Length: 141
Ligand SMILES: [Zn+2]
Image: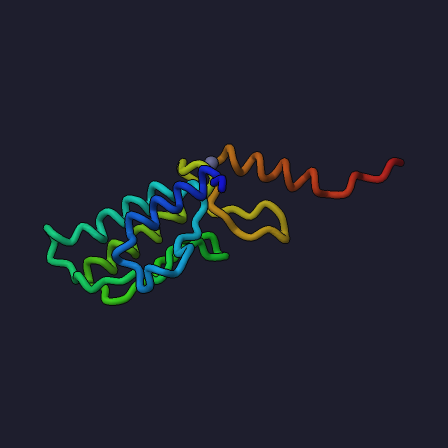
């Protein structure tokens, strides 16, 4: 069985948070673009580093995913105020991080039918070129 780099990175994230999933036998809890792996990895690190923090050890994660509006969504149970704030901050931060490369970006829509996504200037330019190629060629006059 072969894995893409993205799939491996996602599985590493899932493994890191393994003891904290609601049902550790379910599969694919994390569904995020490559550019957000660092953000989510850092978030999991602080959320599960319970030994030195007075955080609620009953915390359980339900999902971590990209929502259609182009932002990160983290669902969890038994959060205390500190954990909820950490999650809120990471979700806010996601709207400034390119989904492809992790560089600073803005929420962008490159064509009428495309969903919103956070893109850096380079990836926005690529997306606009790709959208332009999908348009019908102008009629010859
Ligand atoms: Zn980018």
